[in-house]
Length: 110
Image (spheres, rainbow, N blue to C red):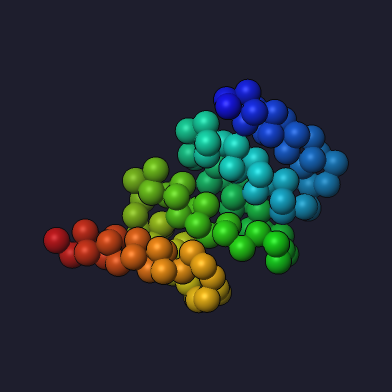
C-alpha cells in the first residue's frame, strides 16, 4: 500500500507541474500524504486545493477536518466540519459529521 501512495503522490506532483491551477492534483496529493501519516503536508495540499474553483471535490472539508484531528487541532477540525455541513447539509456523510462535531463540542465543554 505504501508504494501505491508514493505512486499517487508522484503522479500528483507531475500533475501539479503540468496544471498548477488544477485542484484535483492537490487533493489527491493530500490524500496520499494523509494515508502515509504526513498530516501537515496533507493539510497544506488540501488547503491549496481549496484555493481553486472546484465542484467535484465535495469532501475537501472532511479531509481537512481529519488532518486537523490528527494534528490535534480540534477547533480547526470543527470549523471544517461546520463548513462542510453548511455547504452540503444533505450529503450522505452529513449525519456522521454532525455526530463528530457534537463529540468535539462535548469534549471542549468538559
